[in-house]
Length: 406
Image (cartoon, rainbow, N blue to C red; front, side, top):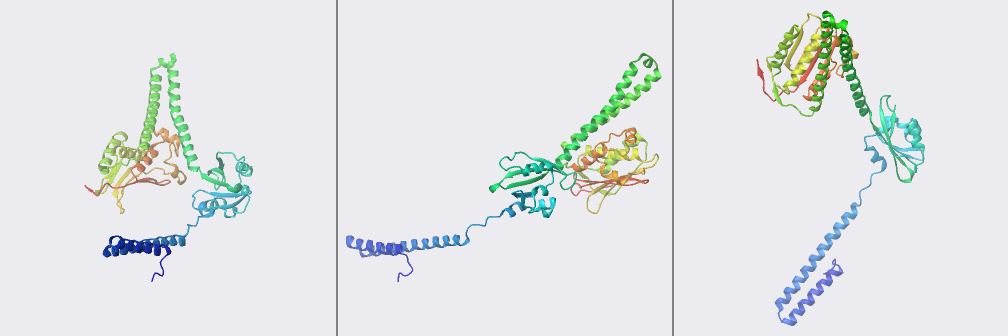
């Protein structure tokens, strides 16, 4: 009858039976004794069931067992940067990034042959106990212009963990900063030297006494001062645009009306023919009106400067099949050779430096345009054919679903 129950359960039932007999003898109350007996047996059976459940649960956990720990190859394979494990001077493990950079043959190879660099070889061949701290800069791994930072750490059993971190982008940014400062200094120093030279000349009694010479020198000084002013204004403008690059503008701007305003201003000041071809229904764009006006001034102004004298500049505005708003500015100039096009938006980059300065350019116009377009989450395309001219196209996202009818 009690087969399948444990010893503790049977003992509990026996105690319940003795308790019921005691109640019967003391109180001569048979119903109370029966209640005591039934209650005790029920409690014992419930306790036994709970114990069985715990046993079943414990058994289930025991069947699953602890999760398998990942091995070293799996761990380093999940790391994006190149990582190697080195033991006794040889590469024992290398993740996919390391094999892609240094070659699939490096596993099992002497680490000094895997990373062929004098500074790396000295660090990797030295004793583990005397391993110095700090990274080592490596140049030439992968491609000639790539820069890497090598970190070496200690591991169990005298092993070493070698990690390579790509610093090419940081070096490129630093080089751009240094070049920018050098170019800005040069662009400011040139007109300043000219102004100082003419001031010294005018200070001479003979030159200062000649009214015609004085007038000519003063005009040159004025022109050079204006050149410096334009450069400083463009530098400030570029700095301001870069500071705001993560703040997405959201005002609705009617580009058709804005093109009309810029066209009228440049017609008055330049006297060139500017043809505006604006589609009938173009939605406004989400933008900063002042910056978009500056963008149009730079694009149309460049087309006038570098187009052939008397040739028209064409400005088109339309909405393409993707829903983006497109602006294109086309000149009929000499065009630009293909090798120059990728660098046109670099600061102070000029295809023809002499012609650019003579036309009053600062070398920052297209750099400013690029940053304005990036802030508006748009795209800038430049296409040119030597001898025929250049077309600069800007794509900007539309503002909502509003359409302006003309």
